[in-house]
Image 1 (cartoon, rainbow, N blue to C red):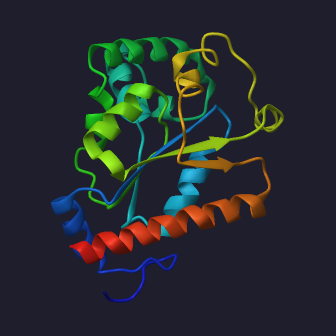
Image 2: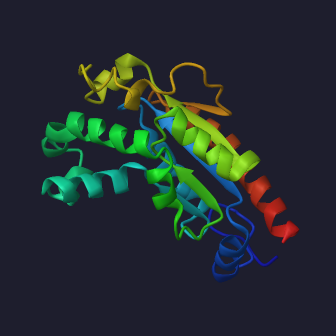
Length: 217
């Protein structure tokens, strides 16, 4: 072992760890979920910042979905990625279209996002459906951990959330509300100290798994 990565993660070097990850597959797969405006993107970005981009990849199921939807419907893909009125205009129909694709092939979008991922830690930042969880568990077994980011409705409203029929009661928002036992629950109600304490615990777990993975190589 030689040195440390940013955030104190033991390192065998960025190139070496990429080679290891491509040869062995991921060390850990974190499936992150949460309601709209719970701050799940903020939490996953914070985790990547602590681990470093050579160690941690953020994979978004909505990326290939939006790209293919934009191609099929003649829309601006980049604008569908922004938190804008443009995206909100098409959100409901995009959800319907995505459900049709998943019904045809539950692993369709999952396979796309993992293709070519070279870091040992994968964070899927927008896990929304039981079929997504089932696919990753089937493919990666005990390497898969579920992370739920939660915030109160009052906090979410302060962040701009308002209940929208056809969106907030759709499977894309409610698919993991029942029948799921999460490995990790992160409360993100705006208290930075509370959030940091929770992230510290999760990062310590990730570092332990990463060290074991590197030694096992």
